[in-house]
Image 1: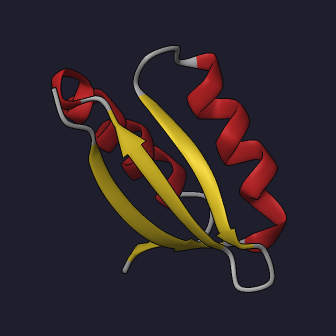
Image 2: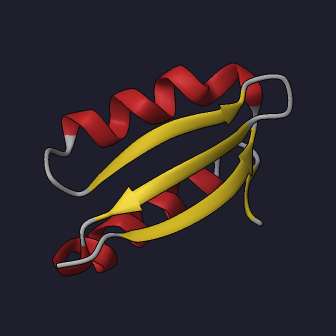
Image 3: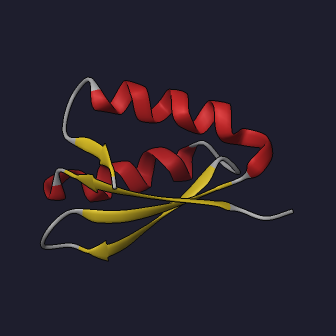
Length: 69
């Protein structure tokens, strides 16, 4: 099974929070910081959990910057 890789620009002050959220939802996705200065992250999403991952992302977008690149 291949992971789905998506890159986002997020509020750089929230990167730790985003990582925590995805770690708390075990098996959905892994967040990796690509550039902490610009808030560039990558999510490696489990293929069978894409719907859950995208629901979490939509919820996070309500509170701060979370744009797909």
